[in-house]
Length: 265
Length: 288
Image (cartoon, rainbow over all chains, first blue to last red; front, side, top):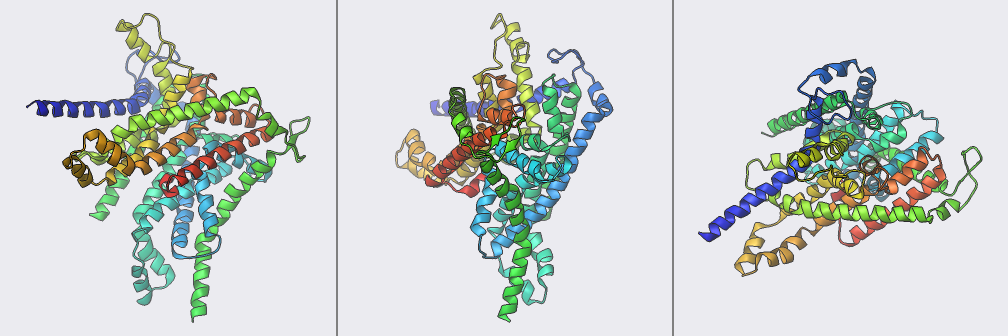
């Protein structure tokens, strides 16, 4: 009897502990979302002055903010496409072939993952300033691909660990050429790993602050726009756009999970 | 025949691995080497970098003001790591071993906050903690305090922001390690009369050590560089190595000195990674 009530208390305190952690994680997001509906104009928007949808409407008049968001989407899309192609080819190639210098490539892959982002940022800045690569959209895309490639490779590699090579041999034996085998056998098997890598590349790119901060030149991305506005107090339309981006990302992930689950089932 | 096959495979190897090799050499190796070279360069009167060998940048690293910031930075990173571990371990344990059918959702809920821009979430904390922020509002109207608490622009606020930013990097490896734990081992230990504490100390902790190590390294290293957290929440009172580097490359406009600072940061990182590998850590588990 006593034991049972003790167990109940234990279970309740476990649940409470988890709830507190989730509260901690979601608290600043709640602040953003609440303030995006807050009718106050007095910076820094601390007290509640009633519900409004104004900020969501005014958002579409803020050309500078919208264009920074447009840049972020273009960079994220191009980055995802190219990093996923380069990374997938590399992961399969490194899995299948032995060649000299493989350990060097492996070591280089870990550098962007392990060293602090600021070091990646300043090293790319020095490169772009020394070469004739103009700082702007192009340098941002190049920088984002650089930090995304390793994550794509690790994701695809995790999928390759359980890969049965004999399927490919069978395909070749049955008269398919290497191209056909790659596109019709290898690629579909690896699809979940590639998808996971691509999603990671996209979300990393969307949120990147530090590396973009050093490589942007005059081009603004959404996170950099936020950084700029923090000095003067974040305006509520930025809160509104952040809330919309969050909802967009959740939808994107739920949809991709759904389709990959349906394919499995 | 064999020769032809060999040739075909070396061509496809080149096609597959070539792009990534070129990319990593040009955008990772060359820039880092260039930073290394620049750390020995001088500035002319117009603050342009000139290739004139000097050790002066490294000598300046021993400036007492800088030394204070290194120590402060390491203290902040250490405390952040410890707090993350202490908070995340029981939490990861509970969600990794729950029998609830919403287990996947519970895990996803840790990741979802990180799909909003990290700067704006840190700014959310500033709004929450500020002198007339939500927290002080609640505390005052509840009669707990009379005057608003001064919570912002301190080392504590910076550590809170760091813990917040890096928490999922601790949860992910812990969750993976704990999920792999064999339930039978825990039962066997209990059956053989071990108390709960003994089971944790002798079985659970050692078997999840890999998660503890990779989580700690994934929190500690970025914590040395996240300059915007100490900018927004620390208000200049809790600068870290990242702030020093950022200033040299932006307002300070002394790239050689910034490069020397970066080389030190790289050295610290490599040292920690070597230590991690010595402890049996696997680099691969830092990636995903």
